[in-house]
Length: 118
Image 1 (cartoon, rainbow, N blue to C red):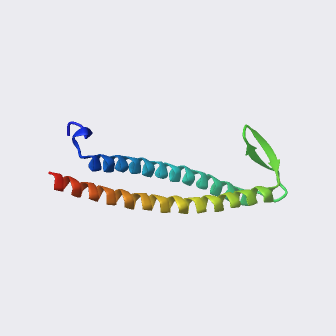
Image 2: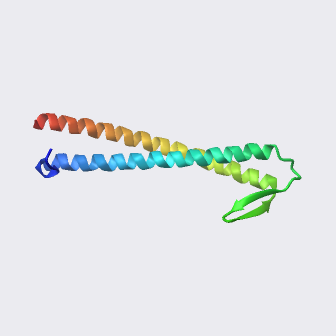
């Protein structure tokens, strides 16, 4: 194709939507990857805390410094963060599925339009 200007407006519009959906899907996948990394780090931290005696000092990163915290408080914060990350992962998975469905439907519609126009 020498240019999108030669395509009918409805095809151009569908191609634009297709590109937007692909970008959205890519962003969702990247968000899920970052979330999975954070979830893995939090799970490793909780596992490590299990091996630490209750009376031992525990430090938590707060920006550029470490702050002494109660082990139980750190465990509670990590568990709450994991719960949030699990919930967010479910939402992102659902959004990704919806985006993939819309993308597939749009691709099929576009292919049909291009066949009819050929």
